[in-house]
Amino acid sequence: MQGYTNIPTIKELPLLIPPLPKQKAIAHILGSLDDKIELNRQMNETLEAMAQALFKSWFVDFDPVLDNALAAGNPIPDELSARDEQRQAIPKTDTNNHAIRALFPDAFEFTEEMGWILEGWNITKVLDVSEKLTKGTTPSKADLSKAKDEAIIPFLKVMNIDNNGFIKAERLENIPKSIHEGSLKRSIVREDDVLFSIA
Image (cartoon, rainbow, N blue to C red):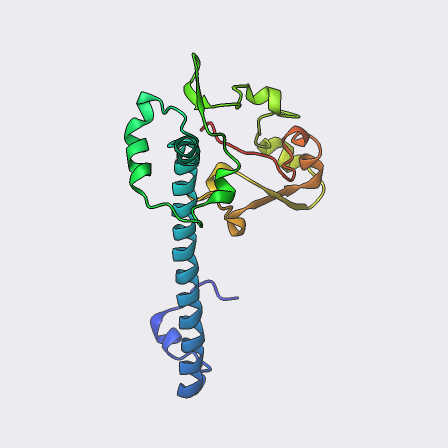
């Protein structure tokens, strides 16, 4: 191992360079991979935008409920009348989300806590619909330095989740299993858990 070198020495270093056709083939493969990565990123952005638009349509603007209420001849709250007019202007077809609309009621009811909500839906606390409510924590440096076993368990932090809600798995740090099952046991993520950040 050499701790120091200089430009003349570097200039004399031998390099193995593949023939030009092979270089071009490698560049083509890498370029194709870059194109695929960019296409996937664009698709993820498109899918995220579609998911946000659907969520807003269903649970903010209540479009399926408005459509059902209009079809049933039920009254529309004044606060939703502008959206009601927009929904009436949309041409109705047989493929106009009948399966989705069947999941929603055809009327609204007023509540003191939240204003107009969907008829038959309840207002409840997160605690009442959860098996367990806990908060995550970060292992201390002291605990990490004392651990004797290998760091093999991926540790999820808010910074590992992108703006689209995807986990950037390549950036996860690993922690020892003894810490994961010890001081962090109340924060173990399981299937169907819902995570949210208060930071």
